[in-house]
Image (cartoon, rainbow, N blue to C red; front, side, top):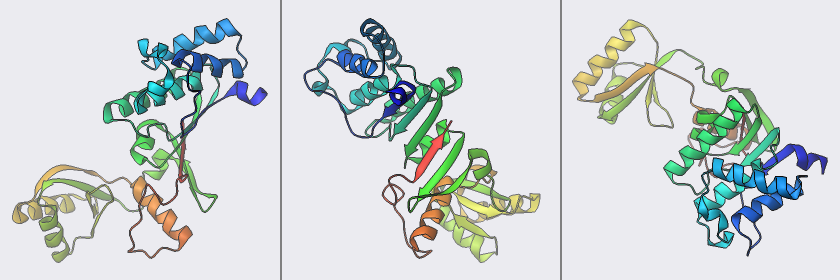
Amino acid sequence: RSIRDVVGYLPEDDCYIAGLQGVECVQLAGRLSGLERMEALRRSHEVMDFCDIGQERYRQVETYSTGMRQKLKFAQTLVHDPPLIILDEPTTGLDPSQRDALLNRIRTIADNHKKTILLSTHILPDVRQVCDSVAILAGGKVRVSASLEELSKPSRPGLSVWFASGKDEFLAMANAEGLVVRVEPRGEIQVEGLSDSETERIWQIAGRSGAIVRRLEPARASLEQIFIDVVRQTTNVAPNSEIDVASADEEAINAYH
């Protein structure tokens, strides 16, 4: 009981009792975590307002869409105002606008209410959007643990180049002219070196190859590449073999704020 009082947990799978209204589910979660009946009801309405659950709160939960069920689980997680919040794949099944709204709520709770939030996910953009620190698990062990800022520092200085078109033509010409380049998992090309001469050569090669550069900025280490490298090292996967970030290890990324 003492653990339930201080921990809020959002499971990946649905957890509700059929036949109950949404508000009744949240109230029950509050009661199980130590709140008195009326306080649990008051807090239920408060957190459901925060989660943007309107009159739907009075519908039976089995009629909810996937997005509504995720909101309901999040409200259940918050109802007793725990200092530690554990979220397991909280954005699964959400459309882009729902996902962005939920991540903003997570960030608001962490920043304004001083909660410790542990986010377990394989959706790496979620980690970059809301988390300060990252731990990567592979083979049942923590293989990497550091701040997101520290992990973002590249091992070698370089430039990241995003293209509107002509990336393959640029890549072929850059390789032919001796630039040290590689394609990152997110699709951009990383060019080693930060001097003015490297920048000038990038623009020259882009012009000659017909490529259209959309963005050019100092390189940051790719969280996707770090994850893939860790999984390869742990599972002895050949360097040139493809790894599915989503399925390589369901519990691979744990990030916290």
